[in-house]
Image 1 (tube, rainbow, N blue to C red):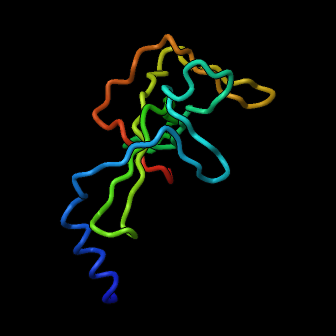
Image 2 (tube, one colour):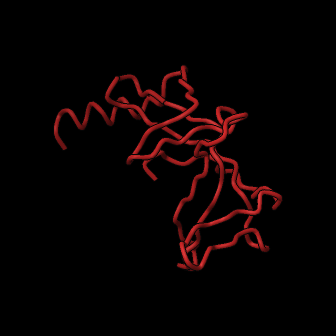
Length: 126
């Protein structure tokens, strides 16, 4: 481990700064994601989030949600920052999802219940 990596690791171990910056959107990988609040009253915007995942039994599971908040955590240096999406996750286990067979588009039944999870955050890069 180099000197710069050691310094960064020691700064990260101190935890994030007390100030958190919040945004109503984020641009990554050619996509702009906006919060639900930002999109209120607009005709189009993207607040849908899908995370590819797996369970402990190695089955592939897709998690679907909507973006509620974008947060930036700073770790005592401009180079050490992390962006998080706070999401509202849908429980799609009981007829909560329809996949278009021709185009592969996913439609979520917004009336399904909220997925009761403690982990509402995902890294933006996910």
